[in-house]
Image (cartoon, rainbow, N blue to C red; front, side, top):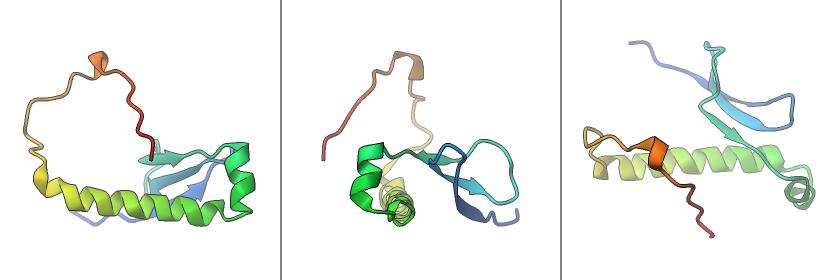
Length: 86
């Protein structure tokens, strides 16, 4: 299996996305900032998006050994939206 290479791009609507370089399908991750958040970041939104993606990748690496990926599938249809305030 050949290695995949990824890129972070800014979409036409201003959102940021992580996608495979050699694949035109839907991005793996999208990040969207509100107008207020963009104003607070003072043109550093790309750097923040990169940091968020890097933190997500690191977090997956840290917890993936604790997850039984073969466990029962989650019933996505019954899932309720969950929000975490940090």
